[in-house]
Amino acid sequence: MFVKELRLNPVSPFNFNLSMQIFKSGDRQIRVYENGVFRQAVRLSDKLVLVELESAGTVELPLLLAQLKTDREFTSADAKEAATIITRLLNLDLDLTAFYATAKRDETLEGVTKQLWGLRSPTTQTIHEALMDSIVEQQISLKIANTMERRIIKNFGEALMLGEDVYYAYPTPAALANADADKLRGCGLSQRKAEYMRQISALIAEGKLDLEKFRSYDSTERIISELDAVRGIGKWTAELTIIRSLQRWDALPADDIGLRRILSHFYRGGEKITSEEAKKIAEPWGRWRGLAAYYFVVAELMGLDG
Image 1 (cartoon, helix red, strand yellow):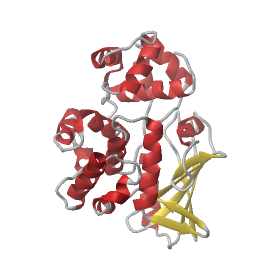
Image 2 (image 1 turned 90 degrees about the horizontal axis):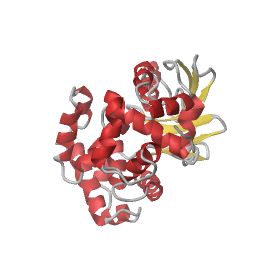
Image 3 (image 1 turned 90 degrees about the vertical axis):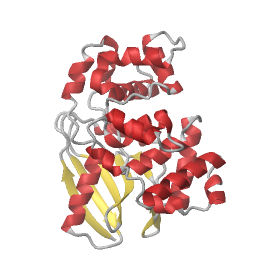
Image 4 (image 1 turned 45 degrees about the vertical axis):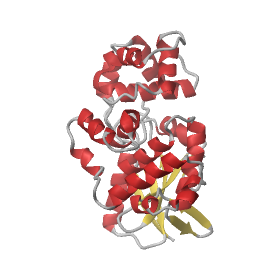
């Protein structure tokens, strides 16, 4: 085994422990946060690497120590690539100053941000990963979807062996494009979702659909429109994909029933609200709508009030 150590300096404020809480119930072979250490297998250009992260700083003076473990020799280029990937995964370069200033326009949001000071939303390594997970989660509970997602990763993702331990990285587009349909459905997917995942992954693997180009787009609405035009995606899936992978905080999946329920809890006393009402609630948040929504999701998970 080869080990490389890195030091990373996130933009302040950054609450590592708080930001990692959503991974406490994760899978140790895929991604998990336990005993103050975050672990995830990531794919570099020519190798898989297990990333182990822990905090050595404070919320206002954050410092992360990273150990990179792999079965091949490291190069300086590998270390640089890994640092870039980790920064993107945890949004370490996100300056929350403007978001917190915007939150002051909304008493409820301001109250939540004060309780979740330094919280960051995680990002997937690739847009493909975010899109596939969003397809899995269409019209089912998140708990059931997460179980399916773990099965997909372990059945079709590349494995990294480190001693007696094995870790899995998210499947490549080619791996899912060539996945056996019955085996994919065996992960719990409906026939239609399995078809969508295979067909879209094939378009990407064959170079007919370039998701990574969206990183250069100025317009979030243009990205949503182009994704919505692909069979099996739709607006809700496109919005969720964008938030998870592109750090486009102006996207708000207002059609999401779970999100509407959470916003209603904080703003409407639990009464059922429509997508349009959810958008109206989010108006004061401006270009930070998606991040504000994430704060409310985490606030509900932690049992916080505004």
